[in-house]
Image 1 (tube, rainbow, N blue to C red):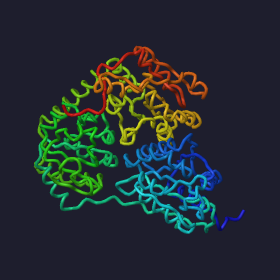
Image 2 (image 1 turned 180 degrees about the vertical axis):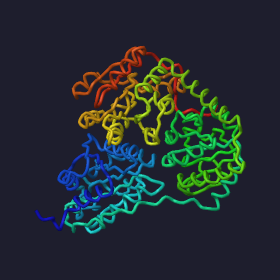
Image 3 (image 1 turned 90 degrees about the vertical axis):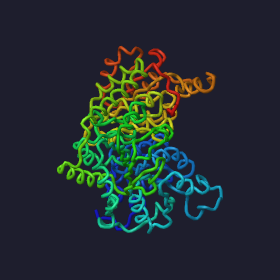
Length: 559
């Protein structure tokens, strides 16, 4: 059979994605994306996962990208379908996830004419620009290759983020010349080298510090090797929730993500330098910017706009985290060799005491659920992916107390929107099990949040995703109840929900369901759950087990 000399733009896209190292795509098939998905099917060069909704598809691509470190694709139709994806795109934008959102569009002759054409959205491009790092339209078949390559490049250029591309259906169906390997080749974005002068000044200042601390955000996820060199010098770290796992959380020189508790703040007061690396110091992790951080505060970030953001910094170094921290380690190692960089002998013990005290504070507030945390850690071990929806349990312990080991082992709804956990667990699990089919993804959700994307349970089953889904069921919006109790005179309104019989629901889908009604049964229940391949739901009956010892009523604030 002869090789065709011409292919559709849809097939061109499929070939480019595979040549770029993209392995997974998630979406909902439609008349406005069939040329692309038909090419996936014919070429068999992409794992395509049929989601049950566009929001779920973007959540899946988001999580797959975060866990694998490789761009994944979300594919939607135009108009309402593209609109359905927007909330999940906001989450990806907040997290800086370099996913590619490929969406269809109506035929060019009718586009942007406000004719009421079926599936048309007025000014869809402005909508996409609002929820993306960048958004592009392919106007001509001849432009498709260049636009798609630029979209992938921009998504992966720091500061990274999701990029949208819309391709009208008649452009997708158009024929173009078959590209050769050279035309499909991508040039990977190069990390930004730090400015030499600012780097040298920072190195000199740190060499004089005796109790320096590094705050690691999501922008430091690629810098684990450099951070390990700093730890070997006795430097301590604390992380944002997005920066978890840059240092394995059992390491003795990390505060983990226990970054806003009084014990951590007291330790900060004893530090004589803070280097913030790749973190926005977000409001919910700094007591709305009132957390007292060590001074002087220095900042390392690839985004020039990070300078002075939220907290004033004495010195700003614009550069890639791995390159910058490796260069700092070079200077500090040289200074150590000349006895010019010496860490205070009491520093490590002080940090460990602060970490232990903060952990105990959290555990004391959990009441019976402290045992659930311990047994989840026991069952999951060190090598698992930890996905969390927004729920009381995640805010109280999921974001901090269950230790993870790697910088891509944690996925959470960073933007604070509920209902993303189940969908994210699909993408996370498929990425996590790539090369290791037995690797588990553990997902945490509330009953209220789960119902927002309940259809993605079917996707979990269809893909046989290796997920233990822990559903904390209190039959309502628990955090809102607590806020109403604390701030609205205990006037509860609109928070009690009708929830399904999850045993019957999962049974109808062929998903294993194991109830947890007594906390003493936790070890046995989790052992059963983790022994089951594919998806399994553990439903924690919070009304039977009882409340937390301390009520969580929204992000903590400075008192």
